[in-house]
Image: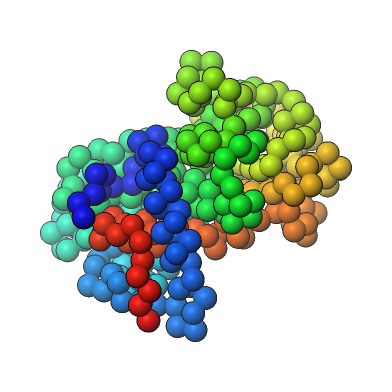
Length: 320
Ligand code: NCD
């Protein structure tokens, strides 16, 4: 069946139905990862190219793992050592890699909108693996999948996101995704790292589902999901917070908050974590943190993304 949107560029342009399709497909495909031989022939002969212009561990490796479980071939492009150093543009690089046989590109780029620009010109599906401070849709989808698994629902939840909301593409995708699924999002952090008043209308999808708060304790008190974020210092341009110690003091999550956190709530972090800044290292041992479950679900959701964009499938027929 033909697809309405043959790219995954952002959460903003996805409907609730489309989000649900990715999640159902991800849940369906996850089982393959636990087989004695976690490999199916579904994408045999397809070539997936990683175009990463920024560092990545989780996102790149889990897309690669997802591709290989589905039997696709992968090639990784790294700006260093490529014709970029000779002045080739992103668009020319993409056109040449298409001529080499790419069936899908996974793009991470420091410029917001780079994957959208490429999608306008490319013949094959584009997946945004993080574009500057804009969006990181596959991260939001894996966060939703993890919450659905842990809490059984994605609606009527209170989700609290702490930290560098302004510069975090994960926060931007999450804020939109949770509201689209029927939950409310509360964001908190140092004032210079919170969205500007003029940006609020972009994030607020309905009157009551998005709130900016200044008191950490109040914001985490009755949250079902708490998400801590890394400070995106590389994107600030100038010092926006006095020091990491001060950030930890006021916005770092510590065991002392366990008394006020709702029983059954879960703690998430997209990684990479700076222990002792966003989270106390002591929190690692508490089972309410589901950070590695997020990473595991990242592989399943990325299998769903590749399968849906390359074949149009919305369900997966089990093949051994
Ligand atoms: C994030 C990213 O690159 O946007 N990491 C990830 O993909 N899980 C978050 C970050 O860099 O802080």
